[in-house]
Image (cartoon, rainbow, N blue to C red):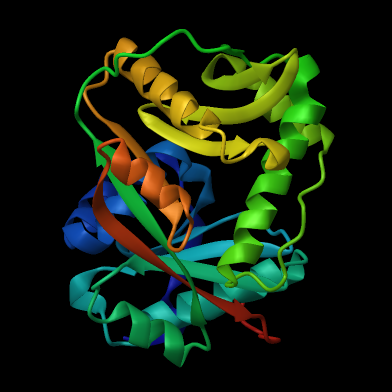
Amino acid sequence: MNLSDIRYERFSKKDYYTASELLSQDAEAGADLLQVLDEEPETFICAFIDDALIALAQMEAPTHQSHLNVFVAPRFRRRGIGAAMVLAAETQLQAGGTRAVSTSFRSGAPASPGFARKLGYAPYYSLVYMKRTGGFFSQEEVPVRLYEDEDFLPAHSLYATAFHEMRVRIGRFPDSVVAQPNEGRRNAWKADAEDRFVYEINGEIAAYSHLHGNEISSVSVRSDLQGRGIGRKFVKYLCNEIYQRGHSAVILCCVAGNEARQLYDSLGFQETHIMEYMRKTLEVSESKI
């Protein structure tokens, strides 16, 4: 088999069953990508030899920093296919303006770190995934309400600032900046406003979060109000909201080293796994998908 025989195509609905079966051939490495395939199939590239699907690349749209993951069918590994797909995807991302690419894998994956290092990726940060199954919290009434479009600027400001300050404290994000609001993000927040919540104090937004299914994400408390127990009350409220929606478990993740881990531990969340992230500054490449 020659690498030049590989044919790349954008994922289409007709490929779903075959792609799902492919990812299931290595359950540990494919589980997270299988979930992304269900939620964001448009981000996948398929690699074929003749009519056989042999590999998948999951690639975010080009931005200053984009994310890329590659999965090769077990029987086609160690033939240079994964490296060829990574280099081809990097070139396409670079053409779209991407200057750095990250990739991720579950901690303990035997081959993934070495594979990434060979392609120029260096350790970046770790993301700890946690789960709680303890049922409803007993809780007093808290000043939480659904997010509204008029909340965008103050909610986004506290969210972006809180996460930037967290990244700076951890020290693994040397190029972190405070994300600026834009119309695209505002429209995205408006589209699923029923899953976004704000915590108010004296008529001002003190905290913000977003629910995605049974996952709590983007929990952020305004910088000048941190350390007052707002995060604890807010997370308990959000857990109860998820249970109220019929889920039996709540999941979330936090960057390793984030002090919020102590809060989640105290509320009964338990670590399920760790995702390791690596990053690379792009080099010029001539391959194309």
